[in-house]
Image (spheres, rainbow, N blue to C red):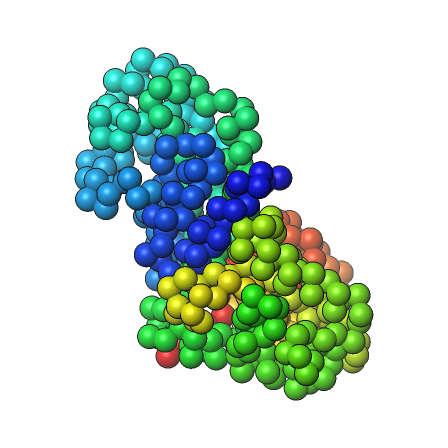
Length: 381
């Protein structure tokens, strides 16, 4: 649970979702919220997509970061490898890896940081478990602090879901920006529904796939007031609350990093999968001074967006499982997959269980979401 002060700092963190030049300010806010002196973020794409982050608080000047990365970062390789073996959200202290305090203080990288920035003790956390990219957030504490207190670690961990969500959103917008000059116009190239709401909660942008979904009149539409309207009143209320909570977060008075809602359809086929997250755009790439929400809508009955190629690269799926996985995310039932593959239903069920186990998912909706997070469904120009 965030403190009121931490919640008030979230808008600066969410600003970095769209504008990469705002990461120093976002990390200043993260450092203040975690009671550290500085913070640094490193993210590397594992699939060759145009996404990378190597940023630090404003105190960490770009030329200093470059010097550190070119000359000293090799001292951290052991820690980096260890952090990547932990689950996302697990805070690792440097003293957990290097318990010999005197040895740590004498190491060249730490001596340089003490002289340059006045920091010594560090705590790092892996933000996302996605195999599509590797990331870590590191907090550096004033050299006067000999050991990071548990209460301070708790404050830092409260921020993790929010920074993780911003990194995930930033990756999607980075890929969009690399392929198209105008991000707003490029949203039509995203093959799932994308809507952006104002701070009032009304939809101000809906891409072509979202408009196609609304035109189906199959349980999800936009009302006259430009707000989401579901045939299921419970889903309507859940979406409205999710958007409200996201807007609260991006304005500094909430603590919601994402909400998932399944919207039942009149036709009775697989429900729409809707994800709502806070979105801020201080750089005005989307809408000037926007502080609203971004809403992703997945239609499982429209298989176009689902490419399992990178899922197959990230997980040890057999060739048969890759083929079954592709059909599974397209919405086919076990029986339909069995017919198409000319195998028994029991064989398909065994393969589906194996796919879920290997991808750490438990149902089709989770597998679809994993597929889309690893490979954002953006058309090639």
